[in-house]
Image (tube, rainbow, N blue to C red):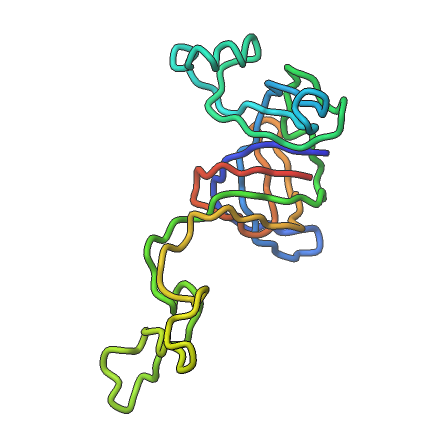
Length: 201
């Protein structure tokens, strides 16, 4: 299984040999270091913990220093499920683990949009724009029910929107730059520039 952590940079477009254009997102990926290997005997499942983003060792807590040991000082740690024996502690993974054309899955936290109404949050049509309508163009309309005489659970209403973990599947690696640790991925990825991106192949 291929995996890496990255930060989102910007969107662009890429042309292939046939002249077709693809929307694409540029990310700075890795390098990441394996800081712990988990196994089913001790932890109950197979996984590796990886560290990403360098920080000063003096800013680490004592427990983090002991845990990381000689692997380095990292800002972020994440886990990826793997098969037994795929990786060992101290392994460094960079963009060379991927190839152009690889089919990947990306997960990230989407942009937070705060409190939003039903038109933006759920694509409600709103009310008519004419015939005396003055203040209810973007209102949800009737929310009650004649039978139970109450608002039913699960009714779509205004509320907090965004800041959710979003997973996008079936994306492709379009370009790889080993010198700058850059991946160009087809399509749009969730989050703002600088968002942590989890890439799995």
